[in-house]
Length: 206
Image (cartoon, rainbow, N blue to C red; front, side, top):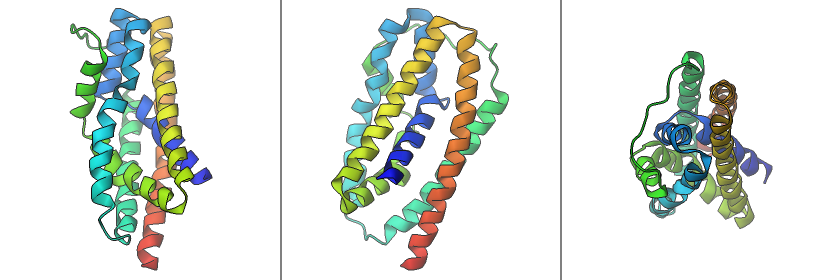
């Protein structure tokens, strides 16, 4: 269970703080409209991830179990790529750079549309969450539940923290966000190496 808990927390934390279209939208709406109108948008992944997860899990459940090892290996490389991206974002983060202004009215559907057009949920479910969820379910359904709850739980907490920080203090928020991006880069690198090694072992044993 601990592996699935750590995996969910690591990947969820990185999803919350790594720069991307959804995070940019949340920050811009917080700066322009305040936290009360922005906060409901953190739940937009529940709208977008459902259909994506169902489709990918249906596909993965019909492939040979030996393929999971190759997916874990590919997932490890993908996570290391995300870690590199987070590191570059931390390295080049400009706390004085203004956040792009979005004139559209903030709502959950707008955030969901942004997330649907973002390739990361598709890649994340195909290469990381999907294979791990199936593996955990086959071992014990409780493992899969822990993975999902820890992933979405820490992601929602992280997004909420970022929204509140940017609302409370514009100068403080970016500084704290940069620190969290650095932490996510380190966590993703460790987790990516673990996934890569797990995939290598699975391929070797098969």
